[in-house]
Image (cartoon, rainbow, N blue to C red; front, side, top):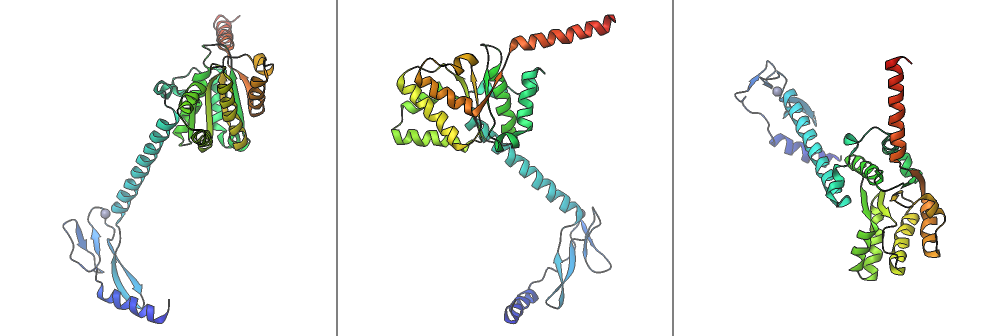
Length: 281
Ligand SMILES: [Zn+2]
């Protein structure tokens, strides 16, 4: 600071005075500084300002703690607000919000899904997509929704949607709006498309499905796709339109068979083990 600026600053400081009488919850100590009665730490201190000692206010210990607590609470509220916002934009079907790890069975599919969330940084960096396939009712959407909710709770934006919904929304748009809409999926580090294969098989629909998949491919961001199709149907599509969609999907996603059958088998194994232990066979 230049001398003139320093001079102006000290002139201002000289006129400023923080000296005051103690309030009811305060007292003066032997050095003439105001002390908090509650925590017995100073609410004033002396500092050297441009060569003069000045009394300035400071926060006593209990006020500091109060302040830290208030800040923490505010941050927590802000985080919760952000998570609510992310959830309402990322998961529009309300029942999916309840599909979370804390109500899930502990089976191999759920364990896999938990590892996906735990390793999210690597998943994202290496662009590791999943193709969850298996029969109706094996819990593919449940597994995907558990992943979505767990990541959203870490305030990571996830969009969980399906092609029926995407095509419906695109139906009411002009072509440049459609492009922007598809491009907007890149705002989500994880895109989950539920139920690939149930959308209409029209040329228009398949073209839009390909556009969404291809845009995701170009964005280099992971996608999770669930489908009732068999892995064989995905690997050997019947026509060109499906072939180019599925080949992109297979480039982005590792197929994971989600199987109620396997789950039952593993429960059976556990029971067998327990029986052997109980009966000492
Ligand atoms: Zn205090």
